[in-house]
Image (cartoon, rainbow over all chains, first blue to last red; front, side):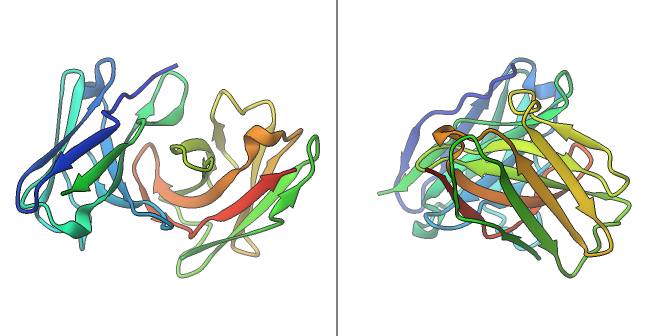
Length: 108
Length: 116
């Protein structure tokens, strides 16, 4: 099976930059999406096709993807950005979606 | 919008059945697929599978033997059936919308199903 690995947690001070990685074999050859999930809420799409932001998502969210690692960057992190973030990609070999293990972002 | 519905409690070995009602869009959309995602308590997200309005489906290989996703275009809803459930199937179940091999752009609020 295709696995996507994320760090369990990332801590960041308000106003600083949070960087969340997602690692998978040749992930750079796939489109990666990122979701934000706050407690008790459904996930929200924040990045799709590696680096595109859906309407309504703040510009401080950005993404990149190269070789084996996709990265979600939150610039000028705010308290409201505290959440669990999941990466996701399509595994063409097994024809289904795979999610990363999730990263808890804590704004200290 | 998407809204899940169905029993919140299912007995072991029985079949879990959920429905997702689509509003503000059509289940016969030519560009959208309709899918199911689940999340066990305190754990991460797992894709279950998706369906196109023509009936074309694809499923998570780990669940394929027990899963059926169907669509009723006349009622503008799609459904999930998961057979022979165990406690491991206890989870929050979300329905989602997406384009082919693309991101899940719309999520339902989720419905909790407990197997006990």
